[in-house]
Amino acid sequence: MANKRNTKNTTISSTVRPTAREIALRCDVSVATVSRVLNHNNNNNFSVRRELCEKIIKTAKNLGYRPNLAARNLVRQRTHTIAVLGRDTTSGWPTNIYQPMCEAAFRLFQRHKYNICMTAPNMEMDDTELPPWRVDGVIVIQECSPETIDEMERTRLPYVVVNGVGGPSCSTVAPDDIDATQRAMRYLLELGHKRIAYAGPLPKHREHISMSDRRQTYLSELDAAGLEPVSGAEALVKSGLDFLVSAVLKQKATAIVAYDHVVAMKIVHDANILSIKIPGQVSLLCFNDERICDLVVPPLTTVGVPSYKMGEIAAELLLKKIESPEENHPPECIKLQEDLIIRSSTIKPPIDL
Image 1 (cartoon, rainbow, N blue to C red):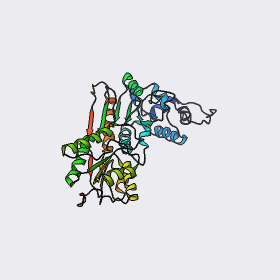
Image 2 (cartoon, rainbow, N blue to C red; image 1 turned 120 degrees about the vertical axis):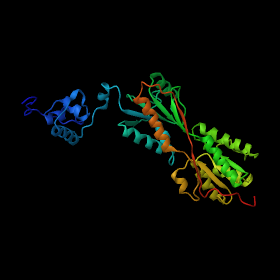
Image 3 (tube, rainbow, N blue to C red; image 1 turned 180 degrees about the vertical axis):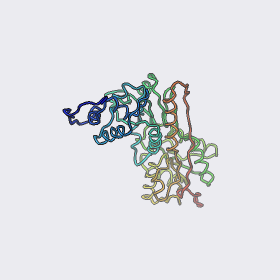
Image 4 (cartoon, one colour; image 1 turned 30 degrees about the vertical axis):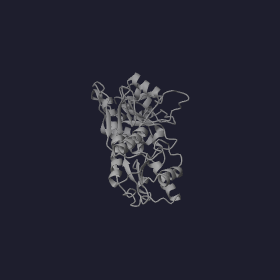
């Protein structure tokens, strides 16, 4: 019989990682046939009987076979792998805006048959955060090293930065913090608050443009309303107790805008220690509508970052660059509006103040 081989004396060795050769021996076909069936390669009118195709797939599954991506990539122009840089950014306490962003991006990549890798590079050994294997494109979460940006620009590797800045060819997706802070401040002013304090980030917070955008917009909105800021807006919040004593007990602030939900949690906790009632004595509004903001007492009025939408758009931008490289894709800077979510932590100021 054509292509029939005698396998009576063939011994299949047991290996830690099953190979295509093992599958070929068990199914009495060539390694090339196994490869083309498992890779769904139908080029050059290649075909195989349905029964044999099912046998190859079942044998591969029973053996626990997984393709060698490195070897496969040697003969392909594309790897169908996306790298995500910024692992430490996604593992913040207790949750953060980047986790749903990653979920949205990953789902879109997977629908387009891409694998995703996320590494923890040792920057003491190398000055690049890129993985040591080839990838088709990169999503940067907030930031990466300047050396990594330079390498991606130099090699023309497609990449998109979420909530950060990149090089000349880079597209970015970010929330519109200036617009969001304006709307938050105008909401508090419309409630009648005239003594509004600003609680900046914690000392360990990494530098980010949102730090200046939110604080400067807070100051400009007060100036436009003819009001003075509560002193301390330029400082980091090292102690929630000290901040509350200064802003609320001494300077009589009736509302607080907190840089993020982590700072807001400290304020809620320390307000109880000082017997400061939220919102009876002071209203509280914060950025980042994390799940905990709706569970704490009182539930917090927040500015919600459109994390899921950011992830989808970032993935779409990157896929467009990867899958149509022949087209000219000028860098885009996409700003997304944030949601003002009103809950019970903000009310009109006390009448007696």
